[in-house]
Length: 556
Ligand SMILES: [Zn+2]
Image (cartoon, rainbow, N blue to C red; front, side, top):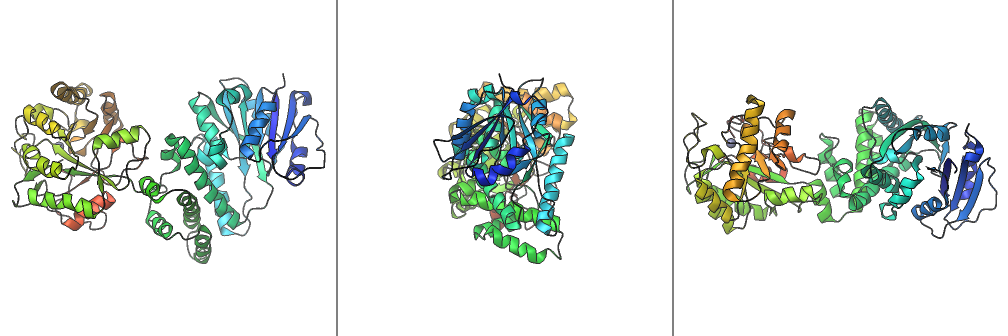
């Protein structure tokens, strides 16, 4: 059996592959290697390529490049298939480096390195070449793992048997067919291996406009791939990455559909006076998201980039009682629930949010989740009628060791000695359609507990609720929000069997937000309707109007 089949698909053999073929060299026995050249375009080639390897040239039965590659796999007889793009020039050593990395060890999918022109005098090309090199150096050091565009490196190799059993490339993944294959084979158990010495250069010289178009194509590829493999969404389509003020600017420019080339032209004007690395990263990420936006509906776009806000309340007081931080008067709660409609929000239950996330579905556009902490009796008597009247779902986090008693974990403050629901009340709450989550047994901060006590608090509160209510309890809320950033505490929550946990870190929840670290913003009983709107729209009640009395998270 041959050792290696090199597969090159091309639409223009005379022009593109002429330079590539003489560069395919190896120190191995030439008889161990074959070259398969598949043409899929309308051009007919006249020249016969000169190579030391056994050569098969054929015309594909299709004009689609991905299908042509699959036909190449069908013709291949080597143990390993090496795919080389027709628009690159490989360095000597590429073939041997690929072969070397398949030797020994479990099966792998191996990707080489595309070398970008250092950019010369253009600031944008210089910056993207620098970022590209830094990303590859991080790969080589092992500081990051392969993902997304790394798989578009010009050369890729896979054991043929793994390719055949995986069914080859998928046409629907378009420009990201190689990326899709890499993720699919990883799920099938293959290792991802980076081959830094399998280097390719681009044949056409790069221009800033070409670079911007490539970024747009990558955005389009990422969205196409996410439709086939929704699990990649969190990694490839995180709108808040990179974080910072650029996000709002990007969103604004995208809303008016400013072409990526115009953003590049604008950046050209700013470049002499601004730090070029930030500017270049803005242009590239703008182009990427412009590519995504062009291939999504407006509903899908909102679901993908806006995320879900989760609000946190505590207690509710009779209609026009004075408002306190932790106590919202019923009249105000009514007005806030009414406001959800004119803010065009879709209230969903925490259960639905968790289910959507676990199934890698995007939650509904403009969704908002309402939660109450501690399980006060007024949640049943005052909040539940207000919620059910408007069909707004909610979840109440119950402290199971105090059910039927009162808040005696606080010795002072607004909530001290406040009555809590009985088990009968919790069951009634659940019958009214309000969800129930766990909030430990005794409301002690998780980081202060030894391992055994923490386990008893977490698993115990879940078991108490499940025993009393006969349902599976999936959600947890950290008492005082403490422990949410502590890896041991979070691991404890997972170990207790919870699917999701709410923190008190503000912000909207997207696919990139860990389910055990859901962001949540507190609605103060004293908040104005404008601040409530801010909490709902931005997932952060303090995003714009920052100063708020008593904003220490002393008690949650
Ligand atoms: Zn609490």
